[in-house]
Image (tube, rainbow, N blue to C red):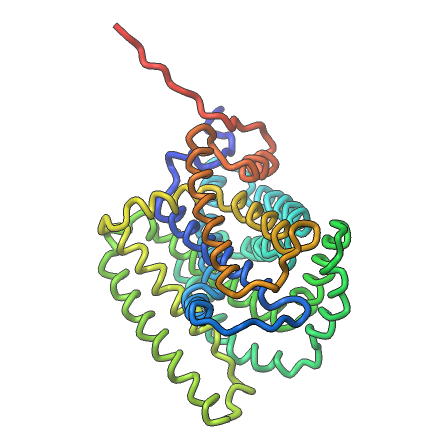
Length: 393
């Protein structure tokens, strides 16, 4: 009877490298989200400084858009794990995962009270679309992802012709951004998300196209058990690292030539996400190689704790940002230099590593993960860890 009950993967059965990668992605998420405040709001003149210039380049080349694409890959991996788990129990995977995504939509709505441009809704929506592939082979999922990736530059260029101007729409709701009332902030977040991500064709179609392709790559990786068999795939990981790094460097050089010479090719072909994904996969494979070679053990150990509480840490980062930067809190907005936002992100991230480690010493799941799991599995799950007492004699 116990074997037929659908339940989450036990903490000790989790794949460590996946949590490490989630932790790394969260670093990019918090940096990217916090530096956004440097650009949004009334015009503020900042004195130029070298530190901010360097950090801008670091964020641009190593984190910008690389984090949510990596998390999309890992979402597809997790989806495949769940499908296997449910199938082994003889249950209906479509019904279960639909319920799970419904509750993710609810969590996304709650998160919108604190964060503008919530991404959880995108994972929830695309998770439902991913159900179309839950019985697919790794080959079909991978090939479909490649097709979407190849189509993205042409789709993006076509959608760029749309007359829709999201900046004008954002200007209409900017007064709410400066409100001291949390309800106004919530309304602004919902309206801003609608204007920037739901009716904006570039986001609604192009971004979702890339996100879904990444999910399919993650799904294919799990079908081949790549993350569980990293050592066996060491040679392939090295090949992936060098190929993606080479493409990332070439793309960054070659794609800038038309801009320098004022050519109009980008009206018909927008390959920006090729640069993003080649960089992201080179970073991901590089982290995997360092991990299986036993490098940076203490760093990866910290990232693993962070990754086990991805949802909780992401939402806490958003709450802290609201209290730091908006008028419901300290009201810093975009008044500080660029480096300040990066510094705040890194400090909060490091603090969360220690808090996550402490929390997971006493509990099985992060608090938000625990709530989501109970709603998904429709049963009560123990959150406190049970101490096993030794038997003397």
